[in-house]
Image (cartoon, rainbow, N blue to C red; front, side, top):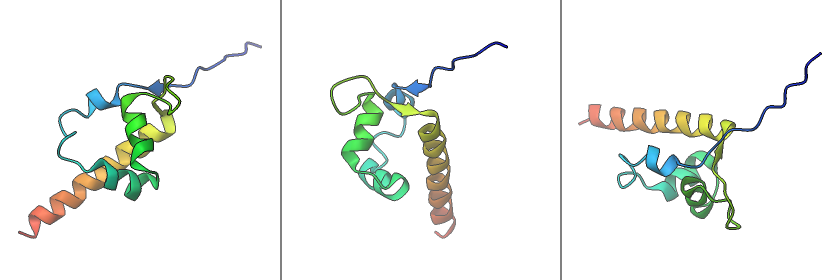
Length: 84
């Protein structure tokens, strides 16, 4: 039987991936509303650091949570636009 060791995925370039909307979103509100975390925690994740100066980023679970949160925000924006 073969044992497979799976290295956890950590995305450390999320800030570049979100560059198109970076200035349009209040990440402080986003971090609090969707992650129930501080803005500094979220900014560290975006910048690919772990808070202690080391390398960090979003793990697979956090990436899925971020994706779902961005979809929810886009739905909220669309509904607001439809009410105009």
